[in-house]
Structures are given as C-alpha cells and as structure tokens.
Image (cartoon, rainbow, N blue to C red; front, side):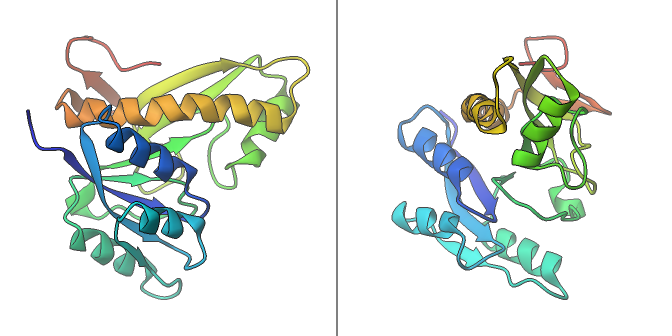
Length: 209
C-alpha cells in the first residue's frame, strides 16, 4: 500500500469540512493524512479542531504579503495536496502548487459561482432562480473564483418547500461524500487533467457525480 497522501487544509471558519476529512482519515476510509492546517483567522474554530486532532496549525496574518505567508506556511508541512476547507479568500496559486490544490463549492459549477457566491448566498441564489437541482463541486483551484477544472460533482434535488437552510443541509451532506471521493481519487493516482477536462483512470470520461 502507498503511504497516505499528505494533506494541508486551509480554513477561515468553523472547520466542518476539515473535520470531515480528519474523520475519514482516522477511520481508514481515506488513504490520506492531514499533516497541517493553515488558517486566515486566529479565532477560527478550525484551528481548535486541528488542535483536538493533534494536527499542527499556523495562522497567517492578513495584510501585505498575506499570500506569501500562507504558502510559506503550507510548504512547511510538505503537503502533496492542499484542500481549501472553508477558505474564504482569493489566493493566487504559485507554480509549485498548480494542479495540487482542491476547492469545494456548494453548487453545480459553473452555475452560482464567482465572487461573493459562498455559503448561504449560494443557496439563496439557487432558490431565487427557481433551479430544480443543486449540489456541490470539487474542482482544482486556479487564480479566480470557482473556475478551475471539475473533478467531482454531486447533485441534490431542490424541493418546493426548501429554505436556504434546508437546501444547505442537503448540499452539505453531499459535500461530505464528494470531497473525500475527490481526495481518494488523487491519493490512488487515478486523476489527470487535460485542459478543462479531468480524466479518471478506468472511467474514460470526465469525472461526474
């Protein structure tokens, strides 16, 4: 068996996505290990989740040189893959990490993505539009919001009685499956990127949820 994939998670808030990955690593269902956490806020509960799991965490102070501090902190953990896990900042991807950074977004991109579209804002927009389906997308991060190549998508229904909170709960459940699936594919060396298409070995087509 190959060594577990070394993950670093970037957090800005509560860290529920981080906790999901920590739990999957701990129960053996994900062939990976979270070796470090980088937070944009000292009071982010994700930092406390890391501490409870025995994972070192670094806080990168906002302000001039923020991006450089974030990536220097990440490099200190020597990750093979970086996972944005509730990371709320546009962050240019340096050359040594291109193709090695994942993000998860609570809609079926390219719909309902872009600047300002995160969390509850996404679910409100989905309901206001009258969409019949929503879901989540795991994609490779690039230098703009929600535009990198798609690795995994999961679809959920939008129900007539949905509120932003009820839709968010359904999407969150899908996210809990989609992100580990995406990391598992990479850990098993099954993924290659050709332009905008992400090819998974054995499927022959771009990965879909």
